Length: 486
Image (tube, rainbow, N blue to C red):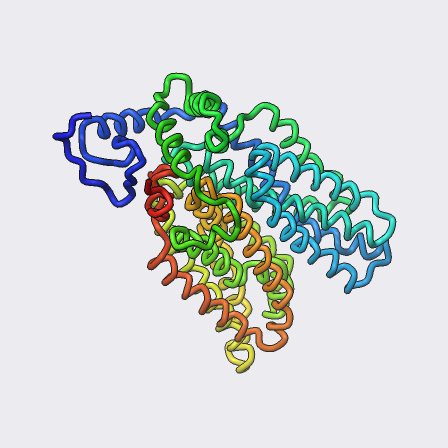
């Protein structure tokens, strides 16, 4: 290469990345980027098919979350299950998800992304069958635990897989479809469940599991996972297939190979993850998940109906309004992800959740003071809808996108398992503690959530990097500079 050309590195450059891929000055880099930009207008059908198969697992995730609400009355009546037993049935899902999260990274790293998705669907199918044919309460618990294990696997491997197969200009939007399909799964299960028997609803939960299982035979393995295990030719062949037969993938394939080879001697243990070079990635990944959950999402989502009733508003109308807001706002987030970037959407989303919780807290404060009795229920509804819409726009999906982008391939399994485990643990804490907090003080509970959402704004502004328009290797080299030095 001509050494007289400009070699001043960009913010995201690494000594191991090819000059054209790093964003250096020079005609080669410019020509490469211009060519890549032209190729972005066409999306190969195989990439769309592969993403749809992957997010079938996301729908399974959503249907599992949405199942317990419409099935409650039927299960309690048919099996003579009490409130305490049904609460255990509902909450054991998160316990299973934590178990699935612990094993997710290892399975995805050693068996492959496709195999991990297959394992998750086997867990889910067994779980749904156990629930559908349960004659006694403990079969419900076993089935729900199995479905939870599958969910824990899916919550890690689906965004990781999509991030690894998509080009940088589409990665954010495609990965966020994961969250959109979760929303669809929750909403449709809730609506369909209002008309169907709980056993039939459980059997319907098997359909998307089978769709993904069959689809896995027609989609490729992640090219980055193949590269990690030295399957260079297969990796480049899969990359060519995913980018289109006329696309020039030589630069991207070289970048993946160079970066992966540099990481081969690095540790893959969970202990090795806690090294200085991974500190920022770990802080960002774990921090976003903690703030996402402690901002109150599962407390509000799981107990929305009781929140509306406590505020003096119709629970059923409030739930319908939430569904009407949630899916369109999540879809809007998908469309904006690769246009506006991750950070702006996160900042807007966190600001909206902060405002929504503040409005809900203000509504309960007015009730406690016996002020504005006519308007406080509407204020509570507005607060919850602002929160739901804002969360769906960014905080719901972007932390999973960021998690899938920031960790190098050598620690992605350990880091992904840790981050996913933290997410589900925090989810369980919030969902378990929410009713106790509301009994203590409804206004205080939402003021706490509002404060945490406000802190999220500062966290994003100070620590979360913008990953839009960067390859995974560029993002990871910038966040973990010492891990790629020779």
